[in-house]
Length: 221
Length: 242
Image 1 (cartoon, rainbow over the protein chains, first blue to last red):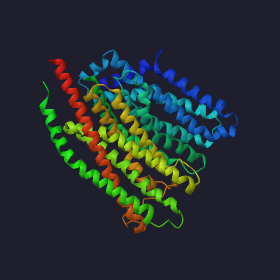
Image 2 (cartoon, each protein chain N blue to C red):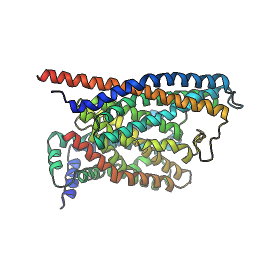
Image 3 (cartoon, each protein chain N blue to C red):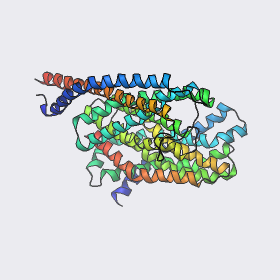
Image 4 (cartoon, chains in turn orange, yellow):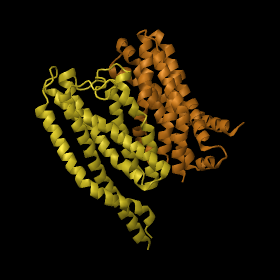
């Protein structure tokens, strides 16, 4: 097993174990979505209308919630220093961390989102768009969010700051993610929005690990 | 011992900026005064918008400046990361609150104009939303500076954030061309020439230059403060050590 894959499996295993991030994130996601019918009332027409946005906003917050664990734990127990000293470039370590974060948060969110769609009376033809948008959009959430996590890793009580840094950068993903589902709902075809999401991912995939590694190096000095 | 090598460059800058500052300040007063006179008294009311068109003379230049200040910030941040020049990070830090203020002015004046013209204070269209994101990016940038005590770490972290957020600038600039939104498309910087009548365009451009000049004045003042604060800190540390 190469070191790259080892980091991924280690992080994913840690996340799925008891007390790991995955359970928390999924519960948070479902709970947040559950709050909306209670808040805006149970009329199915309204819920149907707001379902894409609610699911995306909840997914975004859930992904963000797990970000401060991404580097913080490794930073505190010193394993981040070890990873930085390892022969594997820190950029690849960062990429592996992002992949592990997506596998342990983005993927479970993706799997559970159709169920939440059903709960919110989302229309039948929107599920393909929902799954595709989540599949292309959530990796970008992990990549972009990891930049914020790396920047705030040494800061005490960095959680609030992290959300201030990351949420503005998440907005384009939210807009096009919801746009894809809405377009599918009115029969316009979701591909244009999905292409933009894919473009964001294509830009974030090579650039984000670079920025993450830069930020981590700063904080490890 | 004070690190004189690091101070050498800023000292030269201070000498320079003190020479430029009075001229830039005078230019700002004249340009803004002349621009406001042209905009408020000389320019005719628009045939559709009436006198509300005059909001444009503040709104459009501050929107330009909000992007310009972020570009200065990102450029200085990149320079600081690449060449490690001591003034770059301070320039970026000094530009951020000015840019944030211009962004806020653009948002508020746009909202004041939108109420009579569009019938609403706010719409979630691409241009307005992306400018709002720009405002939050400024806030995040300033918060990151505040949150980290160590100067070098704060400077470099903030620089990385500024560069990541720079993606938003072209999105804002072209949002009105890419998306069909309520906000009107570009009417000054166009390939086929401005589509605004000269009587409205002249005060707009004068105000634009005036706002830029104002930006330079405030940037120089803020930068001077930052440099002096850094120097005071360095000297205090040197004293404490000896």
